Image (cartoon, rainbow, N blue to C red; front, side, top):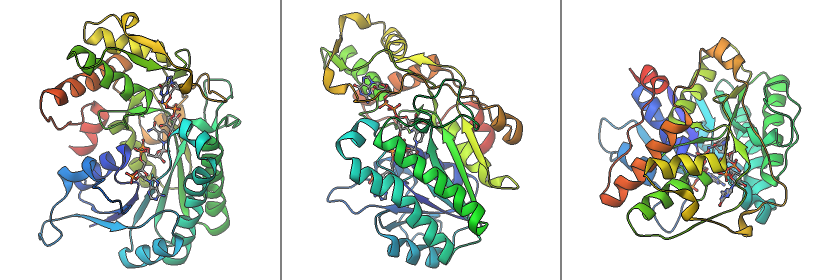
Length: 341
Ligand code: NAP
Ligand code: G4F
């Protein structure tokens, strides 16, 4: 049985990746941060008591700011695959907390790579790089596009991206970077724009909210469906050699387009509800991100199947259902179902 270690298992991607790897027969070990309240909602449905003979999910306290803990854990677990999905992942927040973002999203990666070098040099490593690293570079962006990050988050991710490449070349580690474009789902954090919109649509439809305050509606993003993106992460570690891959749908939409699709799905006219609030404007904005994923299509046979209209519908339907009583989300999409079947 293969063993995987996931830093960031409690996040959107970590939860889907854990689900995928368990379905593929892995034993999964996740790094979780100690908090005064439970922060495992996204993986609770996967968790069994560790005394249960059948359990294949194990959680360990730790933090990317604590390198010695990472070294100890990897020496104990001896994973075959290590996924670094942990980060302060919010771009707007990175302007408020630039130093902390650099410490976790940037230096956190070197702590994990050093732990691997010392404790698990044979393990395969996946780094969650981001299209934010392209920032102001002209779209479409691919593996050869020059980076031009526009936020402390983007700069920290670029450090992690280059240090991953450096450890691949300097020490021969199987260290791969997935440069993923925006991907969303019913498990998306509530302050990212798509989820903020779909939750508001659900609440407005149910008469629980009157207005939705947003910032820049003109920014364009390549929004895909998160369960399909974790399949790409796993595929990258099954390749013969470590490399960098761009992952996205190749289609871009403005924030306004996503607003319209989401409101229309609930038969609402968005212009009656959406208001502007300058607090959501960023000191420097990324105008347009569009992926050219032809390398991943060729080398990994990866291609997204869920388009923006279906994505908005999945998220709005889930957020409406949640207001009507708890409904666990089941990943859909052909990329996901092919991988788990
Ligand atoms: P997310 O939902 O914000 O999850 C982030 C995860 O990192 C959470 O499990 C969080 O734990 C953990 N974390 C944060 N700081 C940590 C620390 N100091 N030590 C240990 N764990 C820490 O992010 P996501 O959307 O799943 O994205 C996964 C990764 O891909 C992130 O690195 C993100 O930057 C990157 N990425 C995301 C996208 C996207 O569109 N989603 C695109 C490109 C790249 P808590 O639950 O305790 O907060
Ligand atoms: O949803 P967002 O906050 O995502 P952003 O900044 O593109 O970052 C996400 O994708 C990256 C990949 O490209 C990841 F690396 C990163 O971790 C994260 O997952 O904002 C999207 C766009 C921005 O242009 C923002 O200015 O929406 C615009 N926006 C307009 N009003 C808003 C709002 N964003 C947020 N969060 N909240 C608003 O009210």
